[in-house]
Image 1 (cartoon, chains in turn yellow, purple):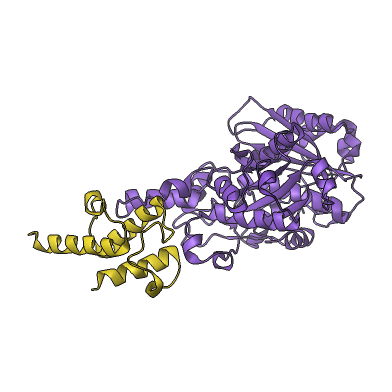
Image 2: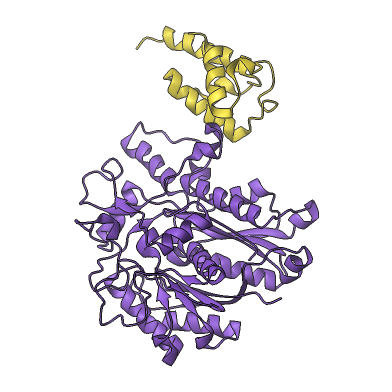
Length: 83
Length: 404
C-alpha cells in the first residue's frame, strides 16, 4: 500500500482536485487546507488506516509528503508492537 | 424587499412554490422506514434536494443540510435582487438568520457515532452542527461584513429575524440585510421527539398527502417540513437610489410574548403581536387583505389563533381571508416565517390568495374565512403573516404594496 498515494486520493476527495495534481512538497496551507480542514483530514486518515494518529507524530508535519513519512513510521511501529 | 429566494418541499423557486400553493399540491409523504425505523407510520414534507447541483462534493460536505438550504435560498434572493456590494457597502450589509435547531442532521449523526457507532467525533462536528452555522456561511459566501445575527425562537425564528432586520435597517445600523431562516430537522430523533409530544398528525391512510388539515374539524396535528426562505431587505433610500425592483415594503413587526405556557399557545399574546404590527404599520384592520396564518393544524393551536385573530381584528375578522399554507409544505419550523411571508408577498404581487388545502370538514370553533381549497383572486394592498413559537414567542409581520 503506497501511503502517499492513499493520502493524495483522500485529499482529492476532501479538498477537491485530482490526486496526481496534488504536490506532496507544497506546504499544507499552500494547498488551501486550513487548520480545521487538516484535523478533519487526519480524522479521515485514521479511519482509512485503522489506527490513531497521535498529535506528536504529526506535530512537525508541513507537507503531505512529510505526513506520508510520519504515517509510514506509525505503520512500522504498530507492526512491531506485539498485540 | 428587493429579492426573494426559497427552497421548500413544494418548490425550489418562488414560481414553483407559488404555483403549487395555488394548485393545492401537497408535498406531504410517508416517512421512509430508513429515516425513522420502528415508529408508527409518520408523514413529513421533505425537499427533493440535490446538493451536487450546487457544490462539488467536498464543499457540500462542509455544510449541514439546513445550511445548504440557506445558502441556496440566499443566493436566489441575492440574484433576484441584482444585489452587488462594493467593499465599503459590504460593511453596511448584514445577515439576520433564523433557525430552530441549526445543524440538526449533523448533530444527530455526531451523537449517533459517539454513542451507537465507533465512539469517534469528527473535528468539524461543532462547526457543522452549531446553531449559527447557516448565518456564518451566508455571511462568508456573500461577503456580508455588517451585522450578523442568528435568531432562534422556535417556530417564529425567521419571522423574528426578518422583523429584527427591519428594525436594524430602520434604525440605521445597516443598509442591506439578507433575512430569513432555514431548517432541516426531519431526522429519526426529531421525528420521535415530536411524536412523543403527540403533536404530529396521524398519517391519512387513504391519502397521506392530505394529512395536514389546518382549521379543519378532522385535523390531527403537525406535519414536519424543511426548507429555507430568504429575503433581501434594503433601506428605502438605497433601493430607490439604485432603481431596484421593489416587491413590497415591510411596514410592521409585532413581537409579543404569551408568558403563559411553554407549548400551549395563548390568544391574548398572539393578538397583542398582531395589534402591535398593525399599529406600527399605521394600518386599520380592514386594510389587511390577506393573513397567512401560523395554522399548524393542531387541535388546540388553530382555535387559539382563530380567537386571537378575532381579538386583533374585531369586526373585520369575519371579512378577512386567512389561509395556512402549511397544509401543503408542512411546518418548516425555523424557516416557516420567512417562507410564509414570501408566499404572502407573492400573493399580493400576483393578486391571488393561496388556499387552505384539505379543508373539507369545517370546525365550528374555527369559523373564519380560511379560503378553503381553491385560490381566490384579490386586489391586495397589505398582508400579514403570523408565526407563533413554543415558549409563547409571537412574531407578526405586515407588508404593504410599495407606493413610490
